[in-house]
Image (cartoon, rainbow, N blue to C red):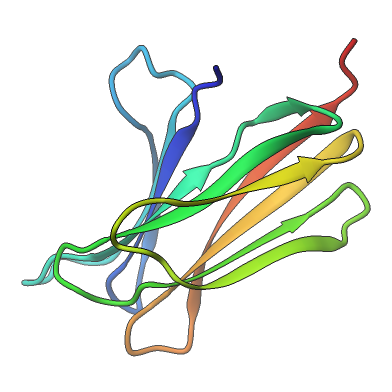
Length: 143
């Protein structure tokens, strides 16, 4: 089974920096963790976890995208997910409020060989701006 990583989208304030670091122990080389963090504040961040899809799949197979709201101190549960295919057309889109009870997953078909671009967007509380996390999945012909 593929080792699917998790991304972390934490929205705290208007000024942010993006930090990318490996998630988990050194043995979890394929797992990826992404956090969007703001300057230190008195309150903890609002967190929407995002599933980082597989980096590579066979054409004709599916890869998994998903969201989960982890409540630390409340905050926005809003998310948007869009997937564009090799022809640069968006063919998958979901938006709403991330569940706090557990993960919400969708399986996306990589119908042809090429590059699939998954964009997760999280809402910054008190702002109309969204913070994006982009993941690339490559579909290749497998024998």
